[in-house]
Structure formats: structure tokens, C-alpha cells
Image (cartoon, rainbow, N blue to C red; front, side):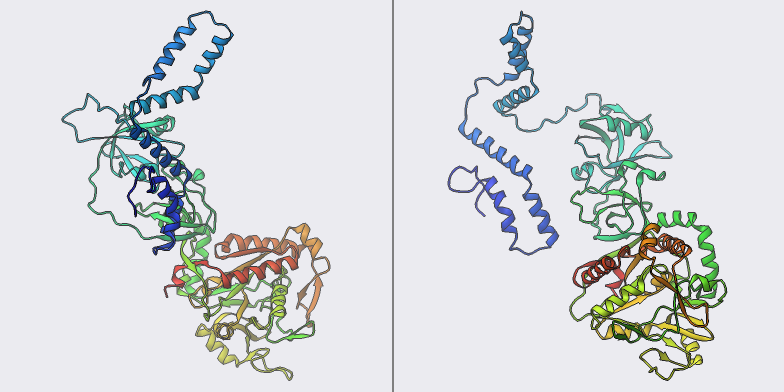
Length: 599
């Protein structure tokens, strides 16, 4: 690299070198995020402007000009005072108005600074009344702009001293490197704080503008500060610090929505982590409740809802009433002349049957989920399917009548070589026109019960004395053929399928408004097996109400597991949105639980 010069002559100056740096960084190795940071930093217009000013000042010094006056601002003030004492005509009034303009005053002040060659910042004078017996102190001066200081304070319960509680990563205090956690605050802008509460000090800081002077007693610092590795989490709940009474400083809080990806900057505090939104160019971190703290709060709020689940867990399996529309004994579907082999509606009964039918729906047990789920944060990493890797399992979830089967059918019809469904198991006898492994896997009742005991079924049910179920091996069979397996299950089953092997992509199909349901489903029918022969009946108003209520319940309990939400307002549009989402799953990078990539 050539020597840095003032830009005069054949060699480039600082500004030219700065302008050329981004293009020079590209061929070199290094982490992509580091290169991106450097390119962004060196491309800042404000930095370029500073270097231009620097070069012009250097050229000014080299030319050694002699200013006519180095106190133009003072002379102007004297002139204004003299003119104000005289009778003013039109021209004098205009001159007085001109000399009183802030822009002109600042221009003359800059002129005097350059003429006097006083470019270096002036440090504040040391206080004259320093007590020689007190602890060593630091006098710190920070310039506060619009951004917050980026530090919080607390009062020691024993001594009453005001201490720096935390330094927000990337904030003004952190970037200065002058203030540290544990420093004792003695004065702010010359105002002693020994007898003040933290709230009073915060008000003083809030009202201060420009330079703020602190007098602190430094804390004992560790010799080595370990750099924490990058950690990303997916937020599983909404958070607004303004509504959190426990947060130590609402202004320092970071708001986020369910599904937000957060980069954890510090976990030094067991109660309050520091984080920022992934991809946010602002380096400042904000406070969020730690995982442990938030889990305790959620557990206290949800104790009444959690206890029934804990009582159920003693049976080591989940017994849940059948909830969804199904026609178990329907033969293989024929759509547009194409026979969809193995395509079945889920083994679920409608609301009409729930009142009389006592069949129960079970899913496989899991020790991991014997205790209640408390969704707070999930550590995630970026994952992209590589060529040759198995496809991710696609799970569709939604309430009765929302259109899950229609969407599955359209996917199977549009690309039967790419999409497929599982072939269910049953203990009922095979009929004449059926083939084993096509419509069903036909097994004996004894073998079915053995497989239930060995947890081979994701879900199963009993209907008219016969078992029906979906096995984990049937999913593996579809995925092993390099196909996308489409599966719709009850929402509580999702967590049992969230494994590194299957890497499920969960899509929640949501109903539109009840007005739109009345309009779009007026000619549609819901299947009922109340009679001996299954029949389809038009949607009733109570079906719409139940659909919406069921959707609200699903979202309230399981939305932290949903990666995509599609409102089925129009079937064609919903299908197009689903196709696009599934294409992106295969082509793009997605945030997935870190355990899926480290297994």
C-alpha cells in the first residue's frame, strides 16, 4: 500500500484510498459478515466527508497562510453591541439581522478555530475540590446525541451506592470503553448522586443534552473478558418492554414479535439478556427477559392450564378426543380421472359424532414432553437443504372444513412424482378390490396393539372395533423415495415430529372471517358418518363458528410451532401461496432448531 499523503502530488490521499477500499476488500478471504461490515463502514458518506475535511485542513497547514484575524466571532459581537445603541436605518437593520443569524455565527466560529489551528478536542478541566483521601476516580465525558446512553444503574442494597448495573452491547457507553459494570457513580454534570434514587439520576440524564460529565469510582475489572459466540434464538412469544413492570429500564428494552429471530449479545445477567434483531444494522442491544426468567413467569401464569397436562402425563401417553372431519371407510379417491393411491382423509370424526362416539385418539408417548411446554425462546441456526438430502416433512394443520384435504389433493395432482402421502395401517379385514400396501397396510389386531405398545404410531384411533393409524415408518418410506411427504395431524402431535430426522415444515391453514366463510362455503359440504352410510351435508352456521373457535384455540396453544400461516380465503390463491412456500423450503435457507443440524 502506498504511503498516505495529503493528496497533493502523484500518490493518492486519504480520501482516494478510502474510496478505493471497498473494491479492494472483495478479493480477500475472511468471514462474509466481516467483509460486509467493513464495506458498510468504509462506504459511509459521513466518514468520506470527514476525510475530505481532514485533507483540506492538512493542505491549509502546508500553505501556512496568515489570517487577517483569528477572532472574527468576537469582533462581530462587539459590532452588534455598538450598532444596537445607535438609531437604525434600513441597511443597519438588515446588517444586524444578518449578523444575528446562527449559521453566520457558526461560520465565524469555525473560521476562528481554523485560524487559531485549534483542531484538537478540549478536555474538561480537572475539578479543584478533589478529596485526596477518597478512592481513585475517573472523570468521563461523553457526548449524548439522540441515542440513549446504553447503560443502566442500580442502588446497592447494603451501601446505598449507585452502581452501573449493565452496559448495553453496541451502545454509546459500550463503544466508548470508559464505563464498566460495577463502576460507582459519584456525580453527573457536577451534581452529587450519593443522596439520590436511581429514578432521579435517570431524569437528570434524560434532561441532559450534548456532553455529559461523569465522576465514577472504577470497579475492579477481570483481566480477561471472554468473547461470547454468536447465538441466535427464535422468539416464541410477543414482548413489549413498555408493558413489563419487572424490566429494570423500559427505555433499554427490546420489543419483538412471536417468530422474530434475535441475536443474543450477552447472557451475563441471569434475569435479563441483551439482544438485537437479526440483520439489524444498529449495533445497540436491548434488554429481553432471559429464558429461565420468562419460563418462570409463564409457568406462574399458566399453572391452572398446566396441571391437567401434568396429571395426564402419569399415563405416559396423550388421550385426546377425535376432533376433525373424516370418512375412514372411504375408498381410494378418484379426482379428474386420476386414482390417488393411498390418499386418505385423516382418521378423525366430526363434531356431530363426538357427542355419541366414545372413540379416543392417541399419539405416541414421549418422555421429553411429559412435562408442560413453556414456549419462550428456541436456539436456531440457518439450514438449507443440500442436493441429495431428504426432503423436509410438510405438516398441514387446520380446523375442520378449512380445506386441508383440497390443498393436499391439488399438490398431489399438480406433481405426483414430487409429492406423496403416507399409506395408513389398519386392523380391519382386506376387501376384495383392495391390495395390501396400496389402500392400507393390513395387519392383525394383535400386531397393531404390539406396535402401539412399541410407539410405532404417530397417531392412531379405533373405529367400529378396528384400529387405524399412521406409522413413523410410513413417513420414512415416502422420504426415502426422494419425495415430499404431506401429512396432516392434530396440532399436539407436531412436537413429537420435530426431530433432526424429519425437520418438519409446519403450515397452519387458517379460515377467513365468518362472512367470507358463508360466501365461499355456501355450496360446499361437510362429510358426516353419523348414518351407516357416510353422507355429505351442507355447512351449517355452527360448523363455521366451530371452525373459527378451533382455529383460535390452535393459534393460542401451538402458533409457536407454525412456520407459515395461510388464510384460505380463496382456494386457488391459498394453493399458490402454499406451492411458493414449499418451493422456498427446498431452495432457500431457513431458521431451524440448532439441534437439527448438530445431531
